[in-house]
Length: 489
Image 1 (cartoon, one colour):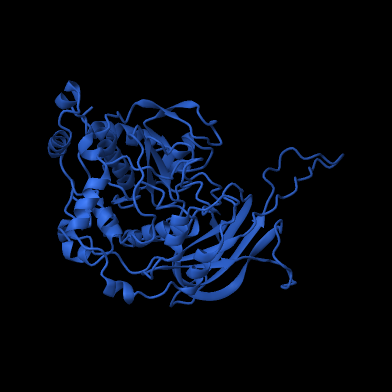
Image 2 (cartoon, helix red, strand yellow):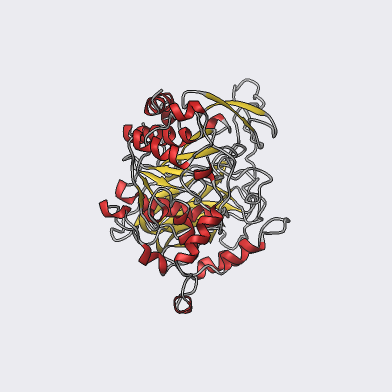
């Protein structure tokens, strides 16, 4: 797999020679970070671990870019507004207030290992219309999407606990309530003669609760037919992080392209064989079993601000499995808004949750468009932060939306199958097969245990979680069969 898996150093160096770094004139006119983000970046790490100074300095020095995050500390919801916030307060939130424009919300807290047992609800005011929504639930998440334990990303000292993000559309007002609730109503003592039970006490809320309001910034470049062409003039005026992120896909699309074009199966097989001379078995050369490459919108295509993420890329050794997720961000988005939604999730993962980049390797919207996620090259084994304990030798595919009660679109399920058939095929994996992964430590499997999993698995197969939602999970059998057919099996 040398063509696909070669170190990014050579490509990046070549790109750096082709395109200059950000000119001094641009740097000199850069606007400062908005006040709320500056305060967030300067906030000390909440843990005893020594933070990664490279990450700290990168985020503190982040230049102004389209998009922003407002980070608001929660208050006790009591009649006495002077009561100080304290760990263990059973109900916290924010009263109704006007704020700067935002489109996505989430709640974060200091300790990533702490769990929020309770209910998070938000209501928002639509910008322009001035109408308030009803109360909407925010999925509490509780750590099921994250970098593996003992990895540099997890141990950076910058990671926070967080709910799932919720897309609410362009808004300028917010109200929030977070209520601690008992983990279970089972096990209480019965009252004689009543048949009722004592409910267990509600656990304390995590400390350092904050509401994050994310503005995705300007729209991404138009995704038209000409978008697959080179954008070298634009890249020449950008920082080297943008050049790096594009250069790692240079085998598949021109530098600066907003989309990686689709290929049919014969074209994909020819490309696969050409990029991996001498590294394939006789059987692979005769029958590669690689599905046709689907069109993929690049990070440039959805408008990623490459200055947000940590520089450089991290890889695992191969891709043996695909974990399917839903983003739990709600279904009230239009497909034309997908780039904005992805930019919001990216900013939430990095600025609010403290990750090095967006957690998923790929994202798919309800119209079936496929988007590049974590930077490092779509054909390469990029190490993600999608399935706690099983990020090594896997990839994460997230379908935008919430699929506990709502059926995923047939277009999105088909896109999961097409993407899996191609990417898993590059590594010789049968989408209908089984494989073994070694657990890095999750709430289902202890660290070091070898676990037999479907090559296409749901998030819940590696971690005790509702993700990817009951309705999407029920479609994985169909996705496996479709993917195998795409590979010609």
